[in-house]
Structure formats: structure tokens, C-alpha cells
Length: 307
Image 1 (cartoon, helix red, strand yellow):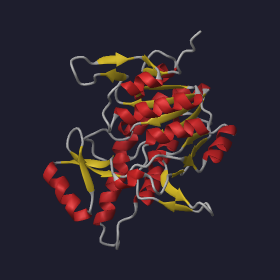
Image 2 (cartoon, rainbow, N blue to C red):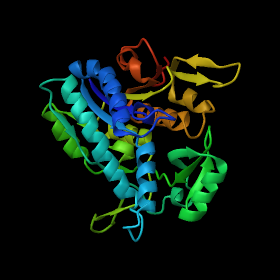
Image 3 (cartoon, one colour):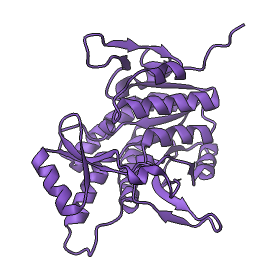
């Protein structure tokens, strides 16, 4: 079975942790331990978030006196793909001796006229107190918005339209490799209508929506979205909270999920199932094997045929 796995940002850096390389390595080792059992009997493509990492690099770039202007987000996104891809690839090779592992810098095409460029919504970087966030916004020209525990920078998050390296991923899978790609949603680029030339875009693409598109383009059987909760909950955070274990795309969309956390995961799962007829699931990282085998998580399946 061909499985595309989307690792949440919590798999790499838990909220409140120092963004040290050693801390991220410990978290990556945990993630790889959870995925190794799946990799033995399946083709695996792994994507990952990069919100904390790209936010840290953006702060460093903005404060670097050697630069006349900060590095753009597409360049910073490529840097995070290289860093996280290397850490994941090394851990995967250690956990799966003899298995080919490739970490691929991946570009995702977006539309230059996507309305998202006029309405930044994607959280990146650390959480700040309100006064600090507003001071940084004035100093660096940032857009900021309130997150669940504080204030964070927000950037444009256009819709992914195509993944440039899909054929390369196909070829690597055909050679038996486990592939790490499309980290942070892929490096955002626009494509010239006449020449196809790619130009970097000042944005960060939602990694779950890119994972759904990647799974569709790769003709994957299963989209596995891993996060820090065991399943989707109806009425999350209220006294009426209940786990949702089995759901269709339409039923999933009828629920009211938080914009910056579960909503993009739910939309990605729904899109993949609707467009392909395959299966998707949302659940906890440590239960990855159990989720694929039907004993944990929230399963998103096609509508059952009537008659």
C-alpha cells in the first residue's frame, strides 16, 4: 500500500520547547520509531510541517546586520526542508537498515493572483505576549494574529495547485526508496504561463493541503495525518466533546473546527477522499501503525453506495 504521511509540527518541536537541534532530533527519533513499523510493508512518503523552524529563521534573518534585506520566505522554506529532511533521513536510515531513503527539496506551484496573498492567515514562528508581538510587527512589517496561547506572525498561505517534483518522487518510489518531501507544504513558487519558469513566492503553504495534493498526484491508497490528539473531536473543548471515529468528507465538513489547527487537516482529508476514493485518517503520531490498521484515529472514507 502507498501511504503519504503528514507529520504535524508537534512531531518536530513541541509547543514551548527550545528550538535547539538536539531537542528536534529527540522528537524526530520518536516520530521515526512510530513510522518504522509502517515502512516495512508499505511504500511511504513523508511530509512535515516547518512553522517553528521557518519562524526562527525569519527572525534571525530580519535581525542579521550583514543582510541588506531579510531572506524571502521561499528561500527560508527551502532551508527548513534541507535541515528537517536531513534529520529525518538519518533517523530513518538508522531505524530501517538497508532501506533507501531520499530527502527531496520540493516546489509547490501556487497562483500569483491567489486571494491569500492579500489576507495572511498562516501562523509561523513562536508565540509572543501581545505587547512584544505588536512591537515586532511595527519594527519588521509583520502581520500578527492571536493564536490559542498568545500572538504570532501570520503570512500568506495560497492554495497548492501542483507539485513540481511529482515525477521524481514516482521514480524514487519505483526504485524502492522511502521519500521525505514537500516539507512545510513545499517551496512556494509561481510558474510563468509561457515559459514555465518558476519564481519564489512570499508565502508558506499549508502542509496538510499539500500532502493531500501529493497523495492524489502519486495515486496513494492512504493519506495519514498525524498530530497530537488521538482523533478528531466533535464540539472540541466543550462539555459535549466526543470522539469522531468514522466519518465521510461531507460529515467532516459539517463540523466546526478551529481555523489554525484541525480545520486544514479535516479539509485535506476530505479533499483526498473525495477526489480519489481512497482512505484518509487523522490521529496521534505514536498510534500511526494502529491508525492504518483501523484500531485508532478518525477514519475518513467515501460515501457508501446506496442500492
